[in-house]
Image (cartoon, rainbow, N blue to C red):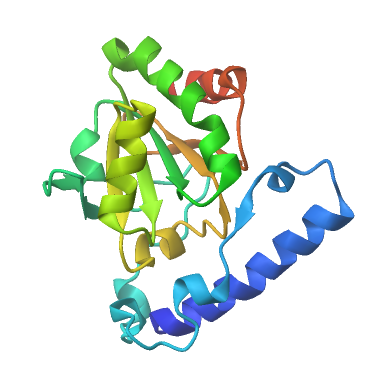
Length: 200
């Protein structure tokens, strides 16, 4: 299965989520923004991530109780950030975009959690989904946010993590295992509850 087909499947899954959000208002996905097929590059043009690769080369889909798929992306300083390098620490991994109001709404609470837990070996990584670097940089500077931000320029990592609705957050323990997942915006209390699952 090449990555373009994987993305087509993701778009179908995204449609299911959107329909569920309408039919079942209690679902957490009601407080998120759907990534459209145009965002991922439905026509495959000018999208380096649509080049076919073997299924064996793709990271497995993320599941609670399973290892978080590894990745390497550039931060806003141009330095490589590799998820597996944070083994031994708890990771709060958040997929977001500047254009998503629900993502923006939870940012102050993420900053508060970061400040509260940064001395307890907790790392926060924000993955800007298909965002121009300068736009993310300006947003981060205006908001005074201090955790690590990386850019998924092709959408490949977002696809690997099946983050069809943003914000989506993964809480990863010291061994690199996913302990909690949340689709949609979170309150500070919800973030702390999910972190507790990953820290213990």
